[in-house]
Length: 551
Image 1: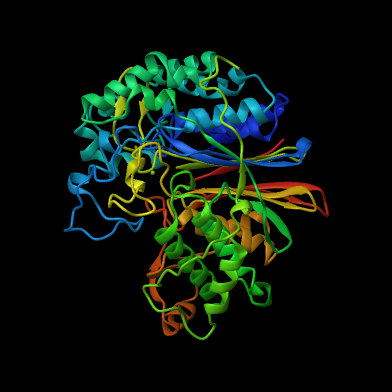
Image 2: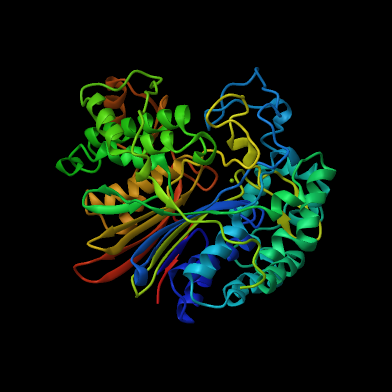
């Protein structure tokens, strides 16, 4: 089974399974297909995180291929815009939006490195075979869809300020035509991207991190005032770990080292949610409280463990913190808003993950989307892949078809904080790519798109599926709430009486509705295994963003 953000991604993954590949082959093929068909959401110039269960080895592996700050980055490289409030990520805006858009916003991309490592070490098929669906899609040209037109329209003025990007996604300078009732939509030529993908298929990660592609990436950045250098690309390494699984409702699960997801589930483990209806006030309240506490604790204390040490990350994901936070929650009232962070303590440093040694790199040959897959041998994989905002930094690399990420905006631009900028550092990435086991078999995997709302989407799907026994598609479709410590965002489909009651408990309630132009509660793709019937299932939602299929 494969579920993902686009039907072409699902088709690419299923083609790998049909050719004898495993779930990791399927997810990697789906991701590279996504780099063609979802250019606003993900791409070769982006990054991601993957969790995988390798059944033959009985091993859970996390492939953290998030962006890194370039070697010339400094904690004070951006001036704070004091006139604006905090961003969605609880950090301040920068003057001229230099950390949010443009060449200075570009972090060292990890997408190709991480997926190359995962496929060569955990997959089965030849590397070149896994990239073939993406290459074929690129050669055929990008079929314009309504979601793409919406993203283009949303960023139209900014795109038109950049000739290289305009040439790539706005041929002729105007919006391309989306499909009508009878006539198809336009197709955008992707010949440059097809050539880049072909080079990567022939040379492996070296085809991206060295040679003419790397030279073009650095030139595009530096000519626009950026600091990304050849050495940054040549020395990039993904972070590979064997995570220590956490427990939730009898499941052993990993998230690719996302401490927000761990803390939230560690809190909810102390409450019998199944004693209530899925749409009960108590469930909405407790989930919002768990998310709020987890976000504020992590925003205050999390930093790259390679730079500030493993203590904070270990403490934030430790069940002991979850127990402390659960004891602070009440069914009678909400925590005071804004929710205050607490000291997470020291945690068990040995309990995070075993870090695998970096391999020699690059080998010779061997906005965000989501892909998950399961195969008949018991393997499961979950991937979140992104360029951050829609069309990333808006920096397009001439002659390559690549759009670069704007992930430097995920750091805190203020010096002296756990998530401050440092050369080679990864910023906070509060997004779970969740894989869960039961009795030694992989039974659930989920990933999402939509910034921090990914956490609420993935965790709600798990709760609805595990605590309340909903079928997978219904678990994804069920209404959600989201809170990062201030407002509690409530799906407009939730009973108005529940919203009134949440406000009475002390929540600052904001009603929102998902639609094709607003990803209010994340899009989610998931696969599951019913151990009783030995049946796999797959689903994606909302229905206008996602697909699923199987063999």
